[in-house]
Length: 187
Image (cartoon, rainbow, N blue to C red; front, side, top):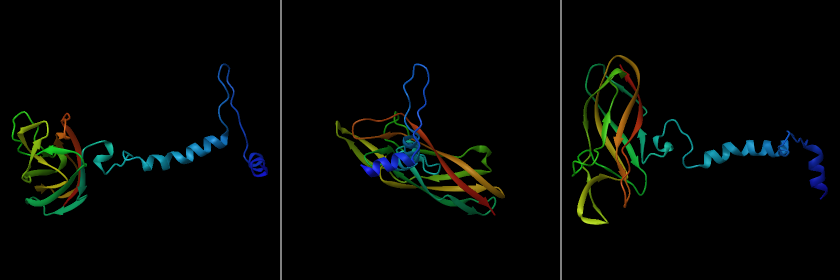
């Protein structure tokens, strides 16, 4: 009891009163809540991370590389690595049905880097639990796209895009596009 009384004497108690509004909490409660906010946010699985696409609720996360050095004006192979969140799959680049959205990598035309080619992995067969007669071509876990990049001289922060359609065991979701940030240095 003495410790609590001693603590109250050291921490100033402030009440803010406004007409028609009940007094707000003390400064100490405000400070504690403010100090805990960054800790609680960091523990959130969807905490903001500018370099990781999955942080925004995406089913696919771009892993690496963050930077590549390529010869100027020559097609250079670059392996782009991605991870699909557990319990999801995405349609492959060549889905078995026309109505399904293929996975596709693209680069903005104004980036100083061109996508000369893209080689996608073969999809895995996936049978729908609700319709065993339907087989899909999908990616799960980690996958790699082999991109052929051609860069002009200089440093180019490329905001490439990966468009995909994610599904779980019972439903498919609207197509989504994530940013694939790559610093391409043409040397």
